Amino acid sequence: MLALSRKQGESIVIGNNIEITILETKGDQVKIGISAPKSIPVYRKEIYAQIQEENRETVASLDLESLKKLF
Image (cartoon, rainbow, N blue to C red; front, side, top):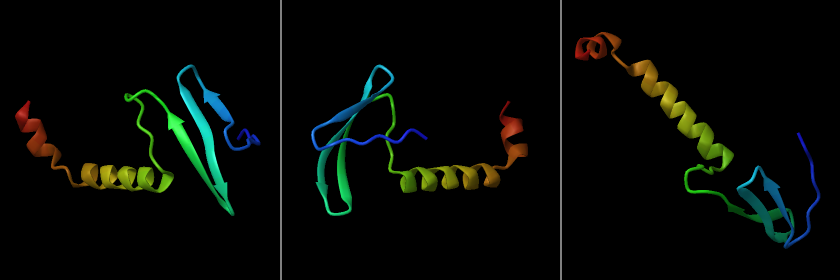
């Protein structure tokens, strides 16, 4: 993991088209802004984990025999 120090108003760039800017710091919270193409999804980690779990549950509940009959 790369660890960087940034001050309010400073940014980091990921690849050619993602920019993360420190907008505000208050106590132990940091507000960040993310500029990225619409084609790149951006999620909070806890939301991403929830999506992954729901996808696993959906795959586990699939009736593969019924799907095979469609083809």
